Image (tube, rainbow, N blue to C red):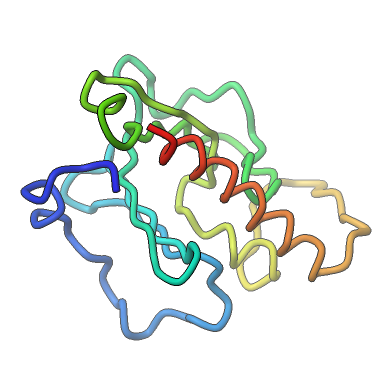
Length: 153
């Protein structure tokens, strides 16, 4: 939704796509192995899917983030486990260079962290009291709010 057809045709799909745990994914997110500053996210919206491209903003060092908590799934990570990623806005606003940024799990595996299928390396991790379904709903809601900002162009 926020790139040209030419850019979309050059997107490298994630390795092992068929073997992903689809039943545990609220969205598909991956880093481009050929261009580590680029990431992609595909999520269900309405009756279909929406895909957006993400980048580490220019001038942001990969090893430096101001937070260690993902703003989508609220998982805490040590060191560089959270990345500031920016998405160009859709439409005319994006063509003018306007972006929306958010802090995400660096590996974009939010769904797996929420479900306990993947563990953060954060020592002394605090356990949430919210039930799993409420954490999943919060993750989806936070992602939807981010995508709303990208798509409002």
